[in-house]
Image (cartoon, rainbow, N blue to C red):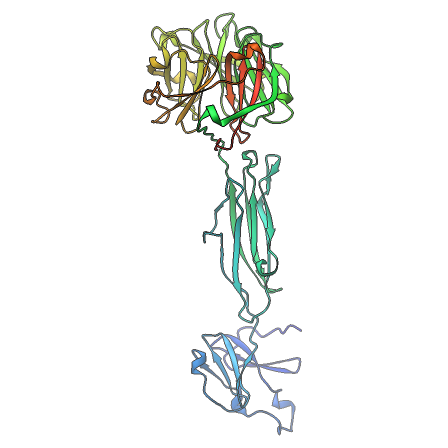
Length: 484
């Protein structure tokens, strides 16, 4: 039965409850249960302990305990936070007021603490709690997700399993290897003796980069997946293709229909599951928004959030920007901004390729002069463009792609894709144009020997998609050297 002690006691005060007598130790702020009942209730004092046993001595450590004492003498050892009683032959530990578990540390395998960054290759993070109890009571370990979620993006960000037996104080956190499931969550790790509980709050983040690096495209592309999409029914002469950032939408543009064709993939990044769902309006590429009745679009880039799309066209020599009122839905494409490349870059014409730096501050356009670099003082805003330079040694490019840190660039050639190293990231002037690697996909049909465009999986699917002269988009796999 719980004892309700008086408030604000003074040193030496006594209190009786349930026929038990307690005395208040003001020095240590403790109520101490005495080993006898209140003598005021009895006349027979024969078997009571001597009065001096009610006095409690203080010593700093166990070594300071007397070698012997009067039977019933109590000594409080401050260094141990324990009370000892001399039984006549030995010192016996006495139970004091309830003590809490002591949580010493909560760390990962390298000794680090919160916040924790989960491995991007699926390696398990092991969280170990180190705790003890002053009274030697058994400890109970547990965890609870108190913020965020273990799931995100339609999948599992991480799973948590608690160890058993000797590992009951360990928690094994297995992260996803899919960037689509990136996320953060907060876990409260607890240790309890059944009554009192100590907790540690750990914050966890899974941030798999969607960056991709191909060491050698001539060997890293391992083969055709036997999956393709024919876009010829919607666009007779396609030249540029791109996926949405989550791989659920696919886009193709060309010079026959002068529209962006949109396809929805029932399985992300699987081109064989794509079905045509909508097209952009003719207004987007014809008079009066973007000038000529036929823009002849050759290059296409979407802003990463799907709210803008950029087109270069060969017939009107323009770089065009348009807004999508519903992200990634080309049927909602509205009026755009037109940049006359001939005015910006003297003598340029026939633009055929377009690529943007991931932050939207720079773009490169391939035309008859070579590859032209354009800067934007306002990211993703064509109206803020200024001409930077041209690299004539990189002419005759079509569709182009940088990897995410700008140290490699991939370009369309007639029969496939060419890879250049970029020693100074995003600086085409640093490229050694005599040093490159070519990959020629194996033709599915006789017309597939000529490549019109390509795009790459920017997640973790290790795929390259090639647009051929037969209006087919072929899906190819990349080996494990395809790093994110």
